[in-house]
Amino acid sequence: MSTAVPASQRDATVKAATAFYDFWNTGDEALLKAAIAPNFTDHTLPPGRPQGPQGPAFASAQFRTAVPDLGVKVRKMIVADDYVTVHMEFTGHFTGALGKVKGEGQPIDFIATDLIKVTDGRITDNWHIEDNMTLLSKMGVAHVEP
Image (cartoon, rainbow, N blue to C red; front, top):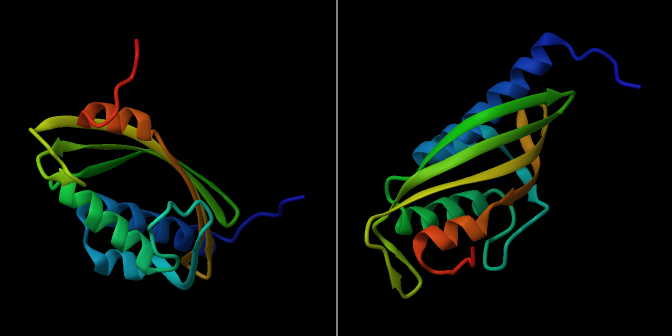
């Protein structure tokens, strides 16, 4: 049974989540450092991404190589105790490179959902899922049959 969360804890949780998604929107690593704990764990770590606090910075830098004008908008944020569920939309243009594939300015628009855990005002855990098939299809890297 859940008990009421003090307003100060809820505010700290929302502040950490907001900073994390502002980082994804801007690439500003100062926001990332303010948002995540030193013991941060990515529970759905993609191959090639480092575990820990450096993982999101690595992912953002790699993604911004392909989509330099990457933007992220939080569409829904649900706070439940020390967990936050966030549904977001990524947008931009594929003008960089993804591996050996060079972008031609294709518009990018796809969704993702995260579940994050916040302890003492810092994100300690993240579980995430992205609509990678839509992303890769819009980049021209994968073909989706109608």
